[in-house]
Image (cartoon, rainbow, N blue to C red; front, side, top):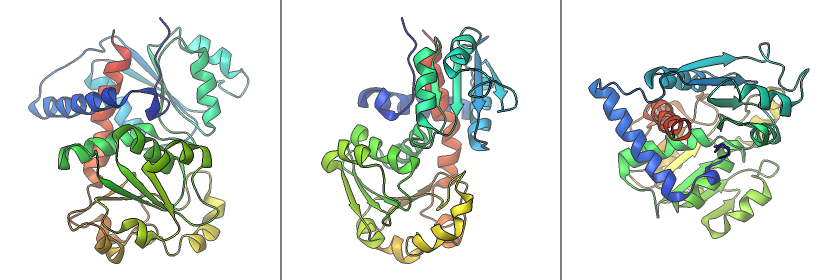
Length: 301
């Protein structure tokens, strides 16, 4: 049987995703109780990083240790992937030596090619187009706080980037309404948007998107690799800060999420991210628990 991969949220059915979140919540409780659980004993996860990260490395490495396995960190200096060796060859070789492969890279096409030739499960830990593991953590955080997100209204404010694309897929898979507020020139990809149909509304007005929303989400204005665009992006996104005025348009009990790292005073004001509606610290912790559930599902029979 060929390996199963997790490259976008669309790789799992809605029922599978909900079951995964339930398992993540259960594993989180077991950890709090000090209950040992090692289904991945003697399993090895190769962690291939072409983009650096704090939360991704720590959560996957910690998760593998807690599940009884081992995580191997591979930086661009440590592999031949995309450098001196074809991606297809790297996939064939690496997947014969380890039980799973987590990749954090730039072009989404690169991880798709790698997965096509890999005999071991491949997990997308972020590409320029998608960040599905973050969405598992976001959805887990919502489910813990509010129950099922079906029928809720979510506002995504800012760049139509990989996080925005993954929220579009989440709207399809978890059956909620998504409103995206982004400036011209920074819209999500048209094909990803079109596939979501009436699940998603696009506007240039962040206040319109936030009105009555149950959850407000944002991300940095300049993602990794876009630092040279910082000043240009600051001008384009000047009216897209999630601040107290914008949150006042949302539902009175609305939650605020951000995948981090955050730039206070840019995409979000300090009084919002550090305020009572913010659940970003739970959201960050849940990367660990959601990914443990994902690793268990992909790396065990």
